[in-house]
Image (cartoon, rainbow, N blue to C red; front, side, top):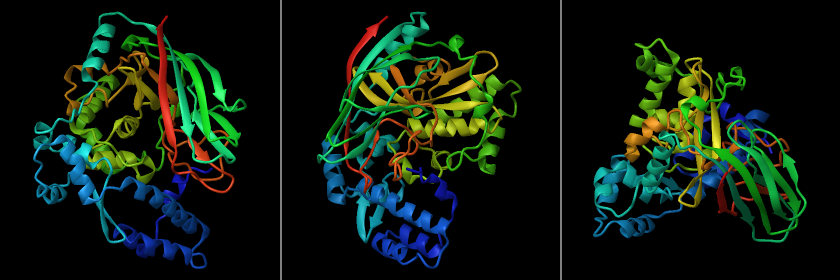
Length: 431
């Protein structure tokens, strides 16, 4: 299982690019089938990787106009269907054509609420459902009431057939923030632990259910609790394809920090820039983006993973270490995928910085200050870097090369694209 993202640095021939962006995917696939003799191995691999990505693209754009309207009518009473074309023209509806048929991104109804103020004001949809909970937890920590926790949860992957599957289930890492990771129970019984930035429980079995019950100890953190011991030189470089220091990015950073001499003040300026200018939206599958930091910066949108990768890119362009953290956040007894950053400061070492939970587009005015340097212990890290593979790779490309929350599945002969990953919180104990 190679990541596949290394092929994104290989340009596609123009005729392939044209057919892809016109949505002529059947033509594109036929062209790839006939390309073997004309192009070298690198271009062939890039084209095959595009086929793999296009299969995922189709699943991301499953809404017809009729389905889109039905979804919007769930939230908005007396929704005017004539507005669909207006929203397309002003860029707030994500639409493509697939083989001549109009398709909308599956999360378009939700994203329209974040991108259009009038829609939000006339809708029953809650764009920030966890704000009150996060404010309660953050005020507790700000008052000096910090706790340690033992979190127990179960993650399972359900499949359709009883055939031989290779399955990678996310496993929490051990670091300065979390420890005593234990695998309490698994099904099937036999597994292998794969160490690395994307830690995993690896199965190879003829079951249609794979699950693990896991416990981990975590802790609340304030800004004075930073990690002073980790090596910082590992987190300074560009990381293609998703972090590259282009001139536009460097210009923005230069303008933001031109009046500051201290690194900590520079970091705060960049963090505030992201929380004030990047609007939260649900993204397509991460594999569909050629360069996540550029996409988020140029389009001024992104979820927790995209905002975090952008923050890392901007900070590293100042030659300041910044590293990725991904896993789950526990909010009101729900475990949801979440991502954030740890940035090195001379004063405190590596401190947690969470642009998503501090994002102004969600009305998080108090939380913006808290989530610079502070973090509640109700979260679990399963990935300590992005765009890395498991230590024991598979035969096929990963569905999600960026992070490690839903697992990966394949057989000896094919990659499995459709499976159901469930994460169930069992217990939280204050230590």
